[in-house]
Image (cartoon, rainbow, N blue to C red; front, side, top):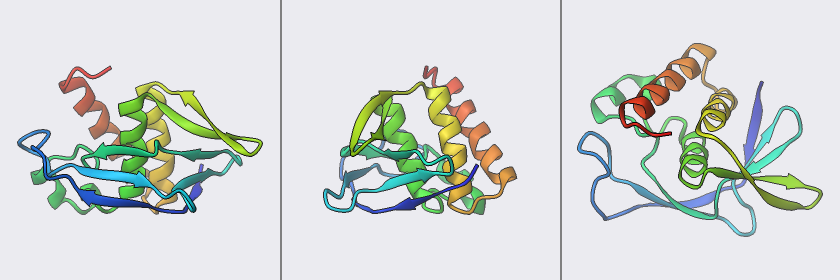
Length: 144
């Protein structure tokens, strides 16, 4: 399944504390009101992240980012959507002309991440590796 991204948002470093000692500083994201970041899935559905949230760019330890497939800024739009979905446990799905909040589980967010990674140009192997790393991170951190 492939799709594409349209729109954009504003992203800037958060000067607060590090989330974890092994990750980079968090970012603040605000979706653009006029042309918001939107994922267009291959089945015609349209998704948007929350309007404002913090992101750590994929929860990827700094030492693993030496591997090109795991660099936090390589697939940043995908990671933004995933962080939004996991933080707020929802995505916004377009119905008719409005985006409506739809609850989403972490498992569903992880598979959406895989589809978005593919849309950003990741290979299936890379997408599966990232998905496995995200699942291991959630298990290690005891995140539901």
